[in-house]
Length: 441
Image (cartoon, rainbow, N blue to C red; front, side, top):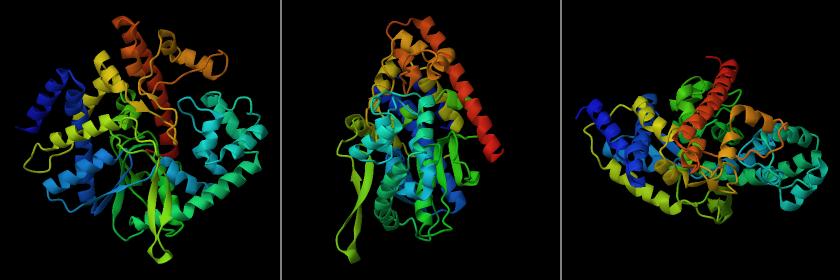
């Protein structure tokens, strides 16, 4: 069967999917497969010999790559690197100085002062001291919007004690973190790249900052499913993406949910929090410290992995050409305009967008009609600027929340989807302009 016929057959079978398994096999597994094909093709063309798949989004990608390398007899070594944004940022903070607040004071779902202090790796006692100095003792656990987070960042810049605590914890974490990265071969003279889901490229930058303390000329490259942006000052040729780039593919971004992608393509274990050293000085082993809480989606992800392995059994004569256009035809309707069944099946996955992964909620939050309307552009602006005194609760997959809202009829769902699309176009056009101004076309 030629690629065009195979593609059409899969598209038709997706339209008939009636179960969580069928959706995974007909939409999500092909998406992952096409991405991993692209990574392997890019790796071969660039002459790299090793790939580091980053925990935890890279786990199913890692399994697929291992199987495909064996299947097609590819000379590529695949490794799984146990990292997280939190595990590499904490040891990086002392290298950034005041700029560490760019990592710590960022928006998200239901952000609080307490969460921001946890991102900074402060103890509860230290966080309470900073809350008193910042005037946040009374509002310690109050949800704050993006505008308030930016105001808080300005306040925190003026508190030397905060930077004293951050610096101390960061320096304590650095030695063991660099020990783990060295142990895993990231300082070896082997051409390699990182592989991850993507989004803003900061984890690559953080790892590079750590490695440069040992090798000042060390440059990393990364392969990503998608990138909304890359860090300022970074070279765009070191950040490669399959589905969308910071400089285009706006339509794909609008009809995509990075949070849903992460929830599906995760690993069963909990996130990596830090590292510890074991053994004697001359025989030290560096071990990732994993959150004692397992991934709350563990059972479902274990099923997804079984379904992925079944999907990959479909043998092909030679390494096919990856097709991002085909992925768009599968993902855009599923993520951008899901049926009620799809939204309820996959929207029930639990997700946290915070680096500490506390306060998990359903990917598609259970919203009332009014909560959905609060996300319309004008309402959102009024709430975020404080003109309208309401709390704006976020949904990681707003299209799923709309599709699963029981009180909306089909017209109401369509109308609210249009508002969501309009808002996302504005956001991604703005990001596109900013990235082109910073990095050039």
